[in-house]
Amino acid sequence: MTRSSKNYEKTIRAFLGEGTEFKGVITFEGTVRVDGVLDGEVQTEDIFIVGAAARVRATIRAGVVIIMGKVEGRIEAKERCEIRAGSHVKGEVHTPSIYIEEGAVFEGACHMTGAEGEAAKRLASASAKEG
Image (cartoon, rainbow, N blue to C red; front, side, top):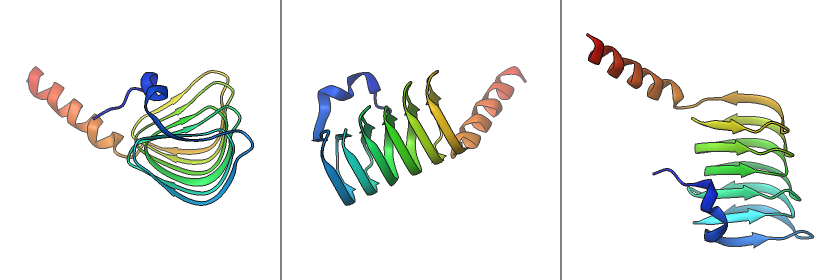
């Protein structure tokens, strides 16, 4: 099931606002948005949003990661990772789908995990239809 990033604001379950600092491990269901400082680890099958004012230094494991602020660390997004204009990401991204807007800064490496299998399936399917 893919999640629409356009509707994420309607489903936010927790919010760490500007001026908030958190160190440790965050585990959650649903959508969480951070606009403060986070240092540690994030674990969810759902949506993690890094707001424009946020500074995150963490290992992030989520279904969908949407970045509008600053992130340093390792990102593992099972569905997709969106790096929006004005954001700055430094580290490693592992995801089958990545979207980087013009005006974003990405320093690091991207590994399109799972993408090879899906691309191979589409190619095989297309070849079978032609032949």
